[in-house]
Image 1 (spheres, helix red, strand yellow):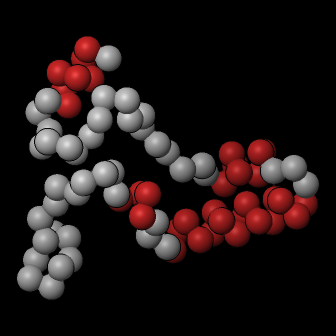
Image 2 (tube, helix red, strand yellow):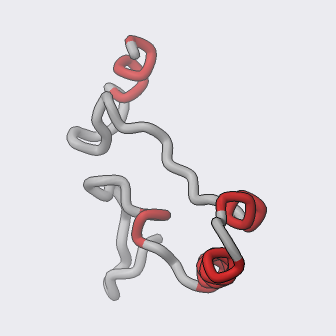
Image 3 (cartoon, one colour):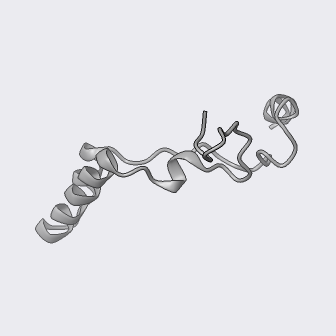
Length: 76
C-alpha cells in the first residue's frame, strides 16, 4: 500500500484512491466457465460479443478523467 500511495502521488488529484483495485472484464472462457447452465451460458456469450463491439464506460472511466479533448469533445 505504501508503494501504491507513492506512485499515486504522481497522478493528478482525485484521479485515483488508495483503495481502488485494478478491474478487468472477464473474457469468453471465464464467462462460460462461470455460467450455471445453458441459458446463463448463452447470456454470458452475448455479453462477450457485446464487449467486442460496444465501448463500455467502465473500460475507460476511472473516476475523474484527466484526458485531453479536441474542440468536438472527442478524446485525443
